Length: 332
Ligand code: C2E
Ligand code: MG
Ligand code: MG
Image (tube, rainbow, N blue to C red; front, side, top):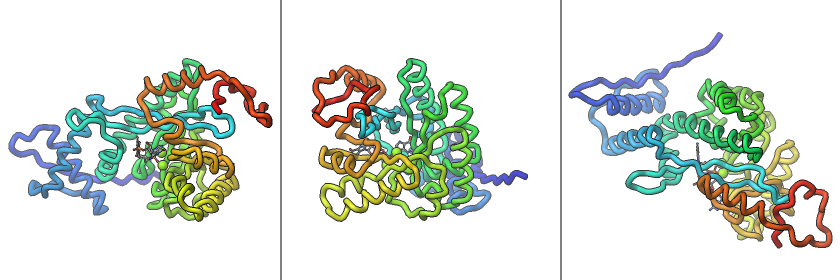
């Protein structure tokens, strides 16, 4: 037996409305139906000004997807122990025709509220997986991490979509990571777990983003098929300013390891923070200290530059075994 639920947003065509406009009105009605947990909502012409703004933003977002205004930026993830780049996180930007380059804060929350995020996620996943496959074909495999939203987890076809994209682009599933925040499984943990299990069984990695800022229970965490936690930036910043943060961060890292997970720290901006995290046994680093999120060409130049750095000296007690297959880093 399969449970299928349908939510409808209805808009009526009057006054020669264009198809685009009509679709946007229907989207708004759909959003209302979702918010109010009703099966059907009908678009009303008497829009509040805020709703009118939303209507045009939604239209612009649709346009952005259809006319290639969205850009993938990449931020490297670096293994503490070896300095090796283990992968990149894909972060979305919008090259808006009049407002310039917009960060996710300007449009992701809105896309999440309106349900448009699923469309954005499909677009981003497809491009990111295609790029991952390109690197793989060029014999420079890089693991690619894509952020997904709580609403994406509610999409019953998410796993089959991901599987379809992986096979279409020929990317080994182990080179894809999906990052989701704890809020992704708070609303309906049972359903979320089922979807996460399905995704994990494809061989795709799962990562808990902004770890430590949500409210998920430890029992959920223990049952989730995740491979990685990302300690939130606020803790990394706190490490420098606040003595109390150190035991919290250390415990979070230990807990991650206790659960058999890889621990990533994000938002590292200073050597001091990096040194402490390294001492605490954190596995992977990400932050402006290493590299900011950048477009593809800049990332490739950065990676090339990294490969060209010669190894000039080793400190006396350098763990050389750990470096057997990476000879490109070493800056002191
Ligand atoms: P996130 O996934 O936790 O991404 C990390 C954010 O921290 C990124 O911001 C990144 O640019 C920023 N960051 C990295 N290192 C540093 C640092 O050293 N210092 C500071 N101050 N910031 C740093 P960004 O790109 O603005 O993205 C913000 C959030 O938007 C992301 O948080 C993610 O939740 C969301 N997001 C981005 N792209 C997507 C996407 O394609 N889909 C979805 N659903 N969400 C996305
Ligand atoms: Mg992330
Ligand atoms: Mg984060």
